[in-house]
Image (cartoon, rainbow, N blue to C red; front, side, top):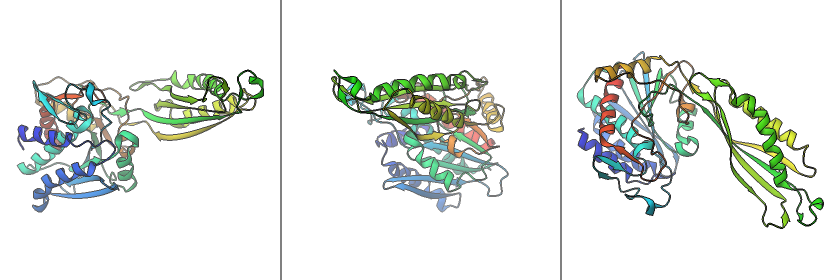
Length: 382
């Protein structure tokens, strides 16, 4: 597949608004492209449905008896575009201007998905002898709760992999480890009363204030710990809701928080701190009862900074006459949180920039085509 054909394929999949839906349309396109190679016995294709119109795609190629097996991961969904009137180019038009491709998913992460697919396709067409068996995963629902990766891991599709490359936009660096995440909700229930007689009620919002103070105190020792690659864990209150009128003592209130964890301050540590904070807050405001719900949790995962996959990427950089890339910890969450298992090589490495989730998301076509060239060598040499 030429670079021009690859760009056209990227535009085609970007024009499908896979905002929590319709990933099967992309799976259809990629499966159709790969089908002649499947018919020739060079690969296998499997679909793993998550919901109607939402299929994960699995392509496997390479020697079955290979000592190394590389997982290649990319997701097909994107976040919402927001107000399309604020975009310079329509968010799902996939328009090109001055060598820049604009549209939702350009960076996060249809460029990485398609670049890795094209690299795999081109390797199989070329007839090159692969060192590893390659397992290409195109997943659904990564942007919400990694639905597809959860399915793949639960069904054992990552069993036996020795390495996992996640083709998310990493910038000019390699990320062999990533933080974990906790999303949680604290709900407070009190008693309504007229604001002129607050003593007759129990202020649910005051209960949240008490919780916030306790949580800040109890999580401080955890956020103070600095991991060598991932830095400090973080804890943020990001949503709050309560009350229904300014002159009524609120009966109900809730807040949501987001935590990014590290191996030094892990999910269990933070869950214990949150639980203790709720218990402490329950003693602070008479008549208010607080409860904690852990809504989503994924662990911090990773592998050594000098793992074999990282070394392969650095070697390919040198083959292209480029300098070694920095190796750093990733602060975002990706499918590796579910697909990586102990002892597996990991690298988050893909084309893109800092426009992910933003208005006028874009990618330089030179960055995209360079990724195809890099992935082709990485997949062949790992």
